[in-house]
Image (tube, rainbow, N blue to C red; front, top):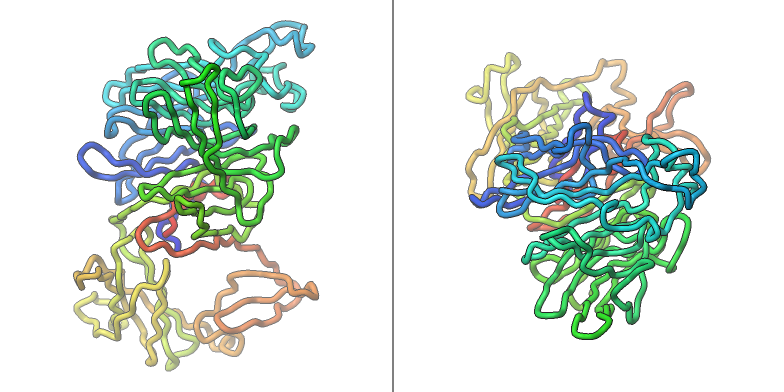
Length: 501
């Protein structure tokens, strides 16, 4: 069920990516998201931190002047004292190997920094162009829509898409366009080893991968490292497998060369290849939670591989960059929302109540109020209804001209109440076409015969000729008792970020 939507109508053309939960040193929890736009699969924006009331508490921008942050990576370290940020920056370089000889070409450098959030000091900076040669790329400028001939369309030869930090200070970096995962020295930025790609220093014993995302450190004991990543297996041009997969591998550094072995892999319910996106999350109980990227699904598996959750977005074209399963408590400082409807005076009144972002509501007390709306003291209790999803419905068998609702927690304590709202009664001329529970055209769908119909609560009526309908995008999700799903929308036109439960 939906818990929170951060959609803002005045920023509908701005995307919100990579929604994440963080625990601070004082034990409190916050959310982060990258707000901005996606241009050719790369972000241009800034990071916004939100408290548990969904209020902005800080904006983090790129430390390099004239640079925007990318949405592929943001993470807080040391209880919120430090952060890892990433960006793409055009630089001039020799692209004569790609027949760009009229002058120096343009390369899109992948950059990540570790910064001190209190002072703003850049504690560490790494640039792919300084350490990874152009010969490692698996794509070409022509394959990148003519990139390399302009600073506005620079050749993205590396394409950083995740950064994780080792306990000893080194970094694990994933690069989609070199089909490689790198270990980077936290001391001097040198490449300590490569797994995959054209210059792999690690032998892949029983698997291969390409165009991967979200490489994460699971454990490192002695000379053995376990890591997870999402193996896309396809970049839109070259294909290395028939289905994308979530993978866990172990690198053994006791041999020469070092050897990486596949421990297990998981596949989406429908199978298929995700050209881009995808995440793998290892949960505290050992389960694996996977977002299938361009394949609009997410799944959960037990540690022994049993599939226990599969969720699909109704819109198969939906692009959801990352989905994570996390515990979350939200305490919005807004008031609950309430809508009242009756088809006619004297008929039953329907209450629809919600509270965007509130996680502690167990039930709603429903009250009537006088027509002047003099406040909650004037009301009488109509009933109590258990919370049922994002929006809870209550039907009063008697007509109510005005009312309000109280949010109640599991212990019966009142959390907040809505404003007193007047009932909406359609004009008498509309009574015959209105439904008993509402009179709003919410969705237009074609029938198998191609006719447009209106869907109501328990009613389906043909639309008159000349009616213009607008499709309503829906999300299908599954209920999880303890944790929530963080869904950061990839679509910059929707501008939606969602927390599902």
